[in-house]
Length: 492
Image 1 (tube, rainbow, N blue to C red):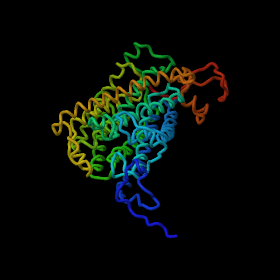
Image 2 (tube, rainbow, N blue to C red; image 1 turned 90 degrees about the vertical axis):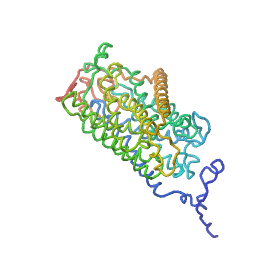
Image 3 (tube, helix red, strand yellow; image 1 turned 45 degrees about the horizontal axis):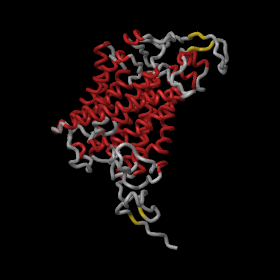
């Protein structure tokens, strides 16, 4: 029996009649796609994946040592559990071919009907490749938010919250902005790589989580009073500046792919986006460290890392819209705004020790606004697909765009904050899922409480509260004392 001839696909069938795009036994489903586009998106997907553990390293370095490894565990959880959730129903919720403006359906659940058909993002790449790329976004977003549990959130309830949050916040916002049927998409919002679903959502979600958890105990194991919080919140130096810097470097490296592949093809626009991304990170890092030097007369690794991240946040919505000669300015302005929110955050009396709200929440809003100012119509046209479909922003005298940017940023911020508060309130009322650790667990450290990898001797060297005269495997809460190693954490 003769083998059937394999012929290249010349025209894609209607999705409703053949969602896979054709018969791989008789048709070459690769033929319509450019191998360069496929290679670019696939390599960027792999590079983007490491952003999630890199955020874990950044947060672990910024924590006090007694809770640092819990952040690494959270990064692995976000990469794994959010990936499974994305495969089961997440991708379908925001990329299904539905017509309502709010949310998708389950037609693409478990990647059913996800193969060779052109993606909704760009007809230059297939559904299955865009689905793979999208996984890296949701896991990174969840990990940005996870830092809000900072040394006093219970681990299992935090995992439940993160999965609920991605369902009811991230996928809703992603559908609104990235699905052609989404209402913000049709409104005309410019958000190139996800400032709304990624940064603004995680930043305002972190604000809600920090408020619901309350402030950390001080070094004496005592909760600060309201007057204490109004005057100055406790701030602890990072236990490992080296780990913090390594995390930042890998985030910066991964963000080239995060932004660069959001063109959904390989084009001049992709290259332009990578250049914009780098310049914004440079501008953000230099601006923050200079501001800190002006106030403290010393350079700060924490400030440098914060500024770099702020620059990357600010350029996320703008990278594919603004001219290259304003990218550094976008990073610098975002860094200035985030710096002063951090400096005066004690006014809110909210213990957001990793500054997620300031850098990602406020930084994302600033980035959206700057996109409305500086967006130029020629930049999107560099992808060879968009043509004159974008009118630009104030740069091109499209003054209406600023109102759309403000509407989009406000919507994402409000939705994330209020839904996060509601989810946390409900989870906290479920027996066994109260969101805050006990005072003993907080003072001992989350690592000792949750991780088998940490031994009794490790606890002594980490400056944790250790039970006196009891086996490391004992569950009996004896009398305790605070044991602090030489050269323990210093307080500003």
